Image 1 (tube, rainbow, N blue to C red):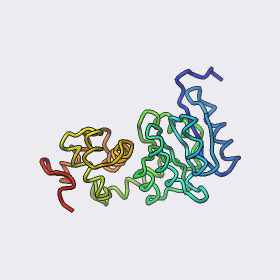
Image 2: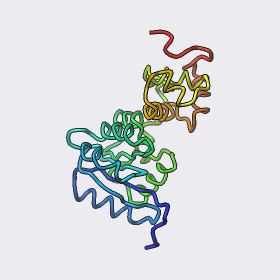
Image 3: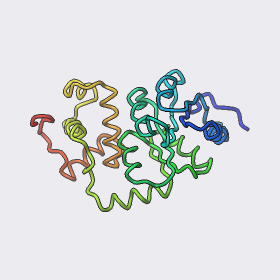
Length: 223
């Protein structure tokens, strides 16, 4: 196996089955671009231990006891806004996939994925790019074709999107909406995912095209 690169992607794994965690670690070890830096058996343990591991990417099994995978993902996104998350699903459940994307997931993989699929998803997530198993992508595309873009934005996300359209940066949005900076970044990530946009500028253009915001309107001006 090639020597580990100094700038390898640091990965933390959350799964309640020891054999599953070991299996993921073995699959990740196939790439010299990835370094396995820690693991947890549930969401609570992940919240206690992940920060010290300083992961770039967190792989989370959806079927966790207590706090499920999406709830764990959302909590970790607030705790470690710089980390990207890949969620492992048993089946291409569209509602669950949308919950995960709204919570900030960048990778959605079926547990039947190959080691090559897993490595590719981790590396893509580390670059800030979405990666999905073909079955999940197809299921999402099918429902996307029937639902108008942006209908799943929350009221808070619409308020924040309006401020993005006015050209405000994260610090200004944090002050205007009286929310923490990591929370702003979390909402921005959700907005980009829901609008299928690669960056803030693209998201604003999509929002204007679909009349989700209006230039010159102050967010939160009305109840």
